[in-house]
Length: 157
Image (cartoon, rainbow, N blue to C red; front, side):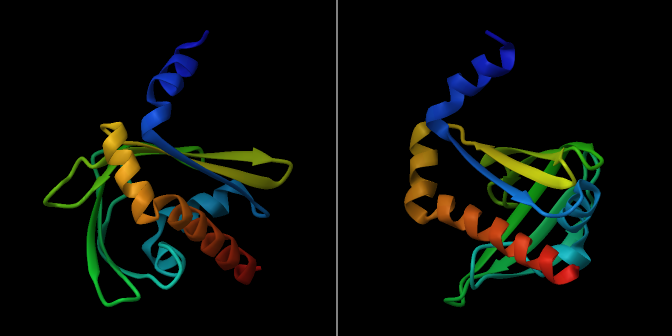
């Protein structure tokens, strides 16, 4: 059994994995994921918008943004990048300035015959923390976010 398999099985009860294949080259998918001029058009579940305050997609860099819910509630977000491999992988801690370490995320961008498979793996500190965000709608929200990215990429063609 590989170390990666051991890691995955050890966190299975406290992780959310969201995957989607996009009909776009991975360099483009990575660019629209990491450029604030693009990400503002698709990031977040249906009905949400964002305002980016700072976005530095480099190891040690931070992306601070506010998600604006359709109900008028604002949600502050802070992503602190640990690893950035151009067009391949992003690793970061997602939280807010008040709670900077809410969950750990690895996003991979894999080329598949001219298309791109994106996999987001969010690992929470505990099963209870994961269950709480699932009840809040995180699974559906992640799927909606990737669907909005798909729509944005389609509109770019």
